Image (cartoon, rainbow, N blue to C red):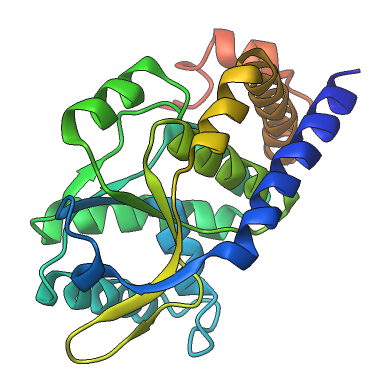
Length: 249
């Protein structure tokens, strides 16, 4: 039943986004956008975009950090003022990719320790009240986000972020298809429209229910991914008594 709820509504969301793709404007981000100089970058979209670079090979972590820094330095050199956001719920998408989960953690620490970029990791999800308040206070003009993830479940997380951004009157810029020259960064812009806000208003409960169902599904994937590490130990026992069986004196 849960899966049917998620599948039905996620297809509806995906179709809405797909219908908007042909209407995307290929724009110069820092010349055309004059309403606000401030924007947001979804950290997981940044990670996915960089590991999908043709020059990146698995295990080349130093090259990965180089790709991230090259992109961010390019944004800053063109006058970009931004915050990078890593949602806590997004971590669930990596439990079938443990090497990427550790890379994600390393990326967050690297950005926090070795750069002056504002990196936010305290927001649980894009549907949280705290995130909504942050958007109202910071008033970003657009959010850079991926339209495709490592798998269908991560793609759905990105879709929720896109739909919610539109609902909050935040434009969406796709992380894929970007090109840069000396002066400009060109990217596909999907502006927030009144029809997007109406869609979210009419489907407010459906969005909440579908998101909860998606998280439940990701939680099950997490448990199945961790189960082989703990052998015959039951997960309830692990979570109830976490402090003792890890320690051997």
